[in-house]
Amino acid sequence: MTKIKLGLIFGGRSGEHEVSLISARSIFDAIDKNKYNVSLIGIDKKGSWHLGEANNFWINPEDQKKVKLNLKNAPEITAVNKNEKVYLIDLKNGKNLSQIDVFFPITHGTFGEDGCLQGFLELLGAAYVGPGVLGSAVGMDKDFMKRIFREKGIATADYFALTKGETDKKKISKIIKTLGFPIFVKPANLGSSVGISKAKNGKGLKMAIDLAFQYDTKIILEEAIVGREIECSVLGNEKPIASQPGEIKLSSEFYSYAAKYIDGNASQPIPKAELPKKEMEQIQNLAIAVFKALGCEGMGRVDFFLTKNGKIYANEINTLPGFTAISMYPKMFAESGISYPKLLDKLVQLGLERKERNDKLKRDFAI
Image (cartoon, rainbow, N blue to C red; front, side, top):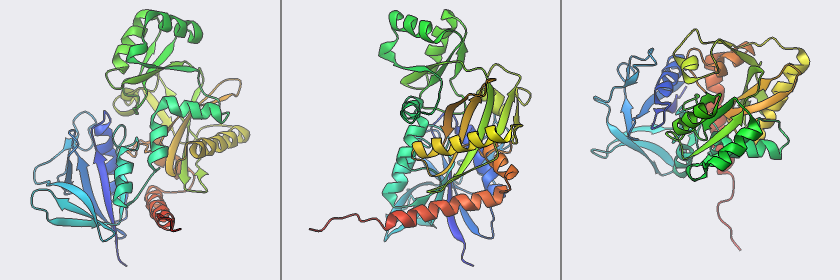
């Protein structure tokens, strides 16, 4: 059997660089090496691509605080299309290092999950895993995501979007009056809870706004919804399926970056939430509705709030969700009967199928 040549892309210029490295290591360890010939493509924090070897590309791969790329003996590369095939090229000498059939980007956050990388892969004519340019872009921008939720009648927390030129006292006062405290402040385009704060008063709100603007030029101020934090994984292209929903039980204020990846005692991810059948089905159906509304394909993890009175609020979608050892996306599908290696295989096949489907579209028009 001819092996599929897979390019696993990870790292990147976002605040989620380290999480991406750990996700990629988990994927590499789990993927079927009898079926896939994997090329490891690490993007450093300056945006340069490097081709590395599995035995030394990751330094401290199990430590969220210390993990990094080993760039020694990892040539700087680019990807090019030649005769309708994609190759990795050594930038120093122009040598062809590898041919790639399909890319698996696991680049969380900006420049990797927001449509930028997906656009490059589209220009290459490459097959790749995960949503395309549009789904990635609107899935990353919390402002536009929520606009689509509203247009589709999907309940979501009330919010305001701000740019740096819109933070005058009058406007902030109006926001406080409308939302009330506490207020969550978030960079509009980031994930893994990076730059997010829960403001309980005016002083805290100012500090939270200043912090969020360190990560993005647009931020959102969002009402706090009190409820259970429920998550649901989605898999598929035209006919997506939803996993068994899971739950995040917190001992911290909210599901922060530290709670997700550093402090093992701050949160308890439960891949199988205790839910009545009716609520479980409502969440699964709503997860698929969110996935479709945002134009997503391949994969996505949809996060919800479930209040005591049974109301479900869509919080956000993660279009390239975490694949670390404790990540909920693969764990929820494992609870649904799809093992980690089978899930990876299905995701790759979905990427190849989409490429085959799109290649049949007409690209010119003859009168």
